[in-house]
Length: 414
Image 1 (cartoon, rainbow, N blue to C red):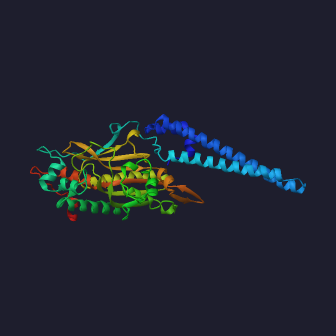
Image 2: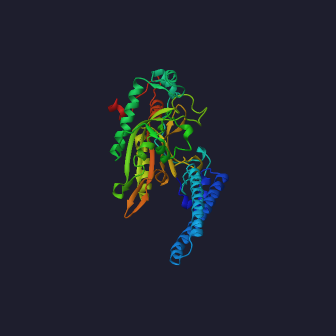
Image 3: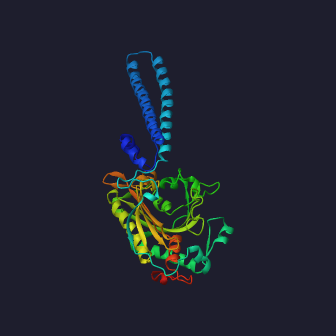
């Protein structure tokens, strides 16, 4: 959650940052109004309580002087009732502000470029040159049919649209990629974890999926449980409402999970193939960092994801997201986009984000620095989205007859 004290004390500056992320004036004015209501409610409550304290002191004086306290007692009792009403009003004003604040995105870093959508993202560099084919490269769904790798029709039969079944060598390649990603991350210092694929609402609120993005989640009926949209949720919330020691930082974690998303806002997009599925596999990196060193961790995570793609000999580019394309919890995001020759374009395969203290404030993740507790910084990113890597291998390693060569680095896993 955003720092409400900063927002209140530097409202114009904070509002300018939020506008970079597309927050409109109506929401900003509502925030300003709620701040004013809370300030007014707290002032009335504190004033009434001060009056009550003053009247309470008179009791001793009245008794020493032998005065009748009946009238004073009646005034004190009436003030108590007034205070209870004012206290409830202050609580409601605070709850209203908190409720709206939960739907406000993180402040973008000052280095985030201006822009409205993905067309305004800024390319930082390209890694590896795309291969030149002496034939027209096929898209992954054509290759899937030729090789019997992906069964889209039976995936729909088993569930619904945007589900698929991997068969034979594709299923083995999926498993090989998961193992390769986890092994690489572990070698870079990330602890491997196996986490629950169902998390409760408090955990999803901690990382920012709730309450704003509930429509994109699969909820278990009659349970306070959701299928996770990413391993970022359980890995980050492993330390929900905990205080770490400074020497423990950074905490580096990695884990494989399936991910479940309704893709509520993607109607009509990527309807063919496996680019946008309701269920997909992903290996995630999560870091909990000292605030002063989160930029270093961020760069390390970006480099690690790029190194994995380079080891697979997959051409890719590194892109910094503009304000309008930045995710809800992110202060800064760098995307890695892999080249798909069948589509003749780069497509996102990993997003690495530094959320600064946004998630830590929501999830109450702190560390002890001297005698004080401070909020940590949390970071997350894919290394990598497994299904999209499978697609990239199919398209980049295809042969003219439709067969697919296995990348050298994966052969030991196959």
